[in-house]
Figure 1 (cartoon, rainbow, N blue to C red):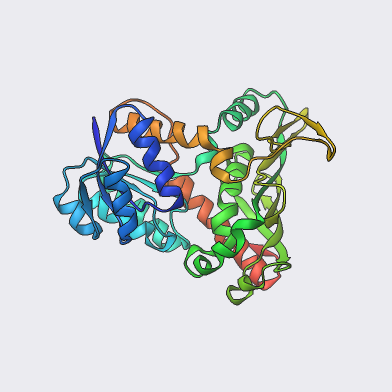
Figure 2 (tube, one colour):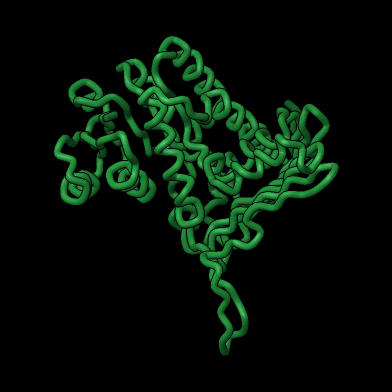
Length: 335
């Protein structure tokens, strides 16, 4: 059994913790760390974790754990990964790896010294069954040569104001939302981003303006092999969480999540005919989060599984840095 110490039990941290405690085989959550008293109470009272800490360094030094599961603020990711590896622990960390390339490079370099330990980043869409099937079809040549990826991350408007205070440390919508889309585009196109242009603005939630951030934005990017990608991000959806990706090839097209259905039920009533939509990212990717966590535990237990590498995550950050500059300067940025 892999003994895990989870760090951060906020909105997403609780979902990860519940998966690890109740649904993932081969592991035990034996420690929890948070600076929020209510989160530690949750770990004790709901999850049954008796070994709790308010200091990450104390947990690494004193807890009987084999791995850490980091669900913390983006600005802490790099240093917490480094500390976990230095303490000889396996490390899972939520995306992104960091919001600058220098910190990514430090982590990748340090991890090479601890190659007997698993270190991975939560680029969860790679573990979604629909995206995995699309990747299989692309690799099998079912749509010929991929030449264009169109991908979007669209969040429910209800969550937008909640996100404003975190923008200062999260890297904004590009790192927080598009990093998934960038990773997918590189995965499907098999090439690195070389040019980026981005436009957008704060059309509904003006609080993001103080960080030169956006509530709606688009980007057009070119890749080294001549392929292209178009990205869209929005924080103002009224219908629900709406992640979708389209891969255009020379002999066909794949579409993933074109309609963000919550179920397959179609409702016909006085309001008309409709389908209800998923409301947040966890509802859309609940299965993927579980598969991702199980893959991490299996890797820690010595099984051969495909995980997102630190290099994958670093490349997603490189793309995010390029597109952030393009958005903030309003110019075409080249690698």
